[in-house]
Amino acid sequence: MRKYLLLLAAMWSSYNVVAQQLYMPRNIRHAYSAKTRDLSGRPGQNYWQNKGRYDIQMKLAPPSRTVTGTETILYVNNSPDTLKHLCIRMNTNLHKYQAPRSGYHSMDFLDSGMVIDKFVYNGQELKFNNDVGTAGNIRLPRPLVARDSAKIEISWHYDLSKESGREGMIDSTTAFLAYAYPRIAVYDDYNGWDDIPHTDRAEFYNDFNDYTVAVTVPKNFVVWGTGDLLNGAEVLQPAVAQRLKESYVADKTMQIATLQDMLAGKVTAQRDWNTWKFAVNHIVDVTYGVSNHYVWDAGSALLDTATGRRASMQAAYNDTAADFRKSVEFGRYALGWFSNHWPGIAYPYPVMTAFQGYADMEYPMMVNDGNVGDLDFAQLLQDHEMAHTYFPFYMGINETRYAFMDEGWATTFEYLIRIAEKGKASADDFYKKFRVKRYIGDPSTEEDQPVISMSTQVSGMGYGSNSYGKASLAYLAVKDLLGDALFKKSLHHYMQTWNGKHPIPWDFFNSFNTGSGKNLNWFWHNWFFTNNYIDLAVESVKGKTVTIRNVGGFAIPFDLVVTDAAGKEVRKHYTPAVWEKNQQVLTLPVPEKLRSVRVEGGLYMDATPEDNVSK
Image 1 (cartoon, rainbow, N blue to C red):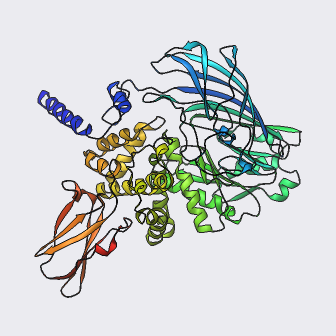
Image 2 (cartoon, rainbow, N blue to C red):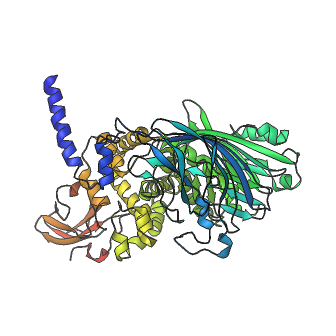
Image 3 (tube, rainbow, N blue to C red):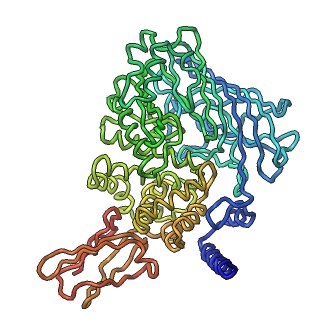
């Protein structure tokens, strides 16, 4: 046993040396030194994350755009640090005239932002400076010490923007309430307070909190949103409440409320105001949609045949939106497929709602998609946004800094489910046109920035390519390298290790190394830390060998297609593993007598395809 332990220790020491070959910024190195993170890819023995328990009440009466709210937060400081101030996140301040934004918006997007009317800390009212952007600090009269908690009470109001993006007014009596409440920003082990301004390109980073939420609206308005609806029988008329209940086990699309039902006042309880109550624990955010004329469909998806567990799939949309008539059907299929194939982890929530808007955006238990007028693309779009359930919600990804950790996975799952829905040829064709072609055909500097670059520090197609296409190509490449079984084992190891926590890229790299039992640092470095791109060339054919030069540098999978002297083609697939020892030049065996040799990358479109064939 002692010899075995010594061997393990030697192997682990060797692994640590190799693991450290991946570049780490100083703050990330500090997290590993402090043992909040571990080179095994697991949370370190000193790992911590803070948490809030939010009790929120919001009120809205369209066509008025004003949202008023109150909340009580029990905030637990699990960190080893004394907090002298709190950072309060108010992402709807993106709409302020003076707020920094990453792109153009019309005047209808702009307003005065969120106003905190009252801020009480442990019973003491504090003055909050509303002249702030999307993140503002408030100094505490008494510091919040390590392992202590505080009670924060906040009252606020703001106007939903006329122009709807990720949130705002969809039409005069339809609203989407996302980022609608002040929240305590993430305080973590590698950056402290997350106070990076939200500028509308890079996305979000939130703690896992517990929520009870009450949304009060006038009669005939329905509220859809995150969490279990606790009082359906109270806010819905009996026949509608019964249909909703039946839909929870239905293997079909049911109409919960038609347009005629909504307009005739046959859906909600007929008191002046109805308060819709929701609850959910250990989730990163809550979002709600409100309308007095949206059609309401629902059905259910079987997630686990062994236990019979189901999830409700719902859709809320304008009666004229033809795409959305298929939303429940598309969603039922996607929830079941994601649960049982890729990623192969059961959908973790009780409900998913597709809400018609303009954002093409994901939220916990909701997606807000536009009506695109093309059922094929509408399904793909909804699939992509629903795939985000796993990244960044099941896994608490810091999207603001590392968008490739969630968008790359959603793009990968979007591709894999499309193979099941439309066939591989269709999936390949769309992926290449939509995710690869523009990137690989653009030789500008920003396209070849390392994927590990902070998402807030790249722009334009540099942001899009790093976050979506390049990251997805990397994940599909390691899938090809490991094979499906080992890849899924590694993916599950990573997801089960970091579910409900805050993994960073190095946790992902190290976790996959441990889960696969392989040191993949050469691959991670090649794909995430370099300025590589995709470009292979057939350099020469001599005797029984062909020399392939990796001009672009990425360790990609490819097929070598040899046409022999008789004109017969022989195809051999090579995984990225062939590049482990030498990532510049590869010498491969071929028959002595042949007509030609060509390299085919498939999804990995080549920057200069003309040199992929021998001359």
